Length: 336
Image (cartoon, rainbow, N blue to C red; front, side, top):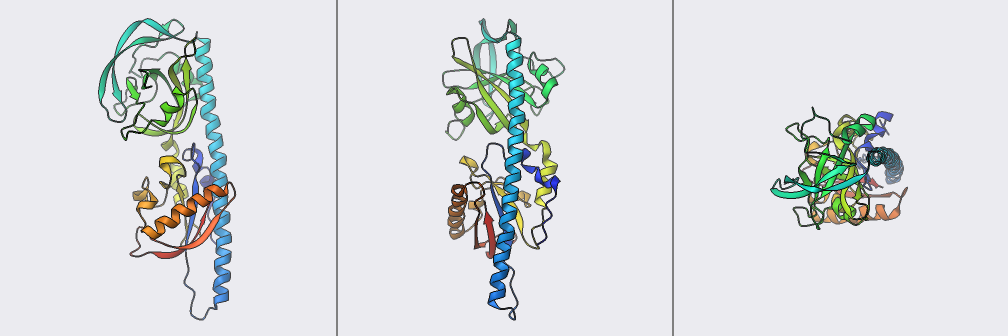
């Protein structure tokens, strides 16, 4: 079996899998044996192929897990540096003086005017600085030390809407993304997973949509001296930062007809195509691309793979339709 899985391919998960339990699916098109080949030989071939692709699936998963752990350690370190910097500069306080914000929902882009106490670090107000040519207190100090992106949020209301009051996250127009906020409730009516965690006093770790792109992130509550949650602190790295590495895994060769496809394995990402050599399918749900019978088979085996835990591999043969196929064809599969 021709497996071109070099080291440069192995670090793909650095920006793709944080906060997810990935399902790695290796698909091999069943090779039709000639009529002069005995059924016993064909059976031996399939058995060996399943062993090989199972090992590939486990290897890719292990690499994803290792890279994920390294990235999470990195963003947590950045958050620790930001927290320390805030503490050394006097900690957070809310001024008795209010300031008006034109708060923009980062999803709907709708604007609402809000009046909030000035957010202070020590005795210094963070101001309303949108210009990267002018330094933002604390945030830019941290970025010089660790890189990535840092944001200080202020809580807008009891529901938990969180306003960016200091950040180095860049909007499409090149300005700092202050004045944008993460709503407590997403446009689909579901609670925002970041805000939901933070207002309950917990830390959110995982993928999150930040202004206009996906990032690998850590968010933690910011509390006043009385323990009230008045905001949150964020550190993150943009997911597309190593797009070239993502492209490398798309070209991994698994035999003559096989490939590796990576799916989200948790929450709204369950079944979502994260890495595939067909760019048009990225972000789509694999369940929407197959017939009802295959869809049921996929969901069942994805769940079996997750329940099997680390190292568990589900193998089998099923009818599978690829983008260029006119009809479903039998493929050997390994899922972990």
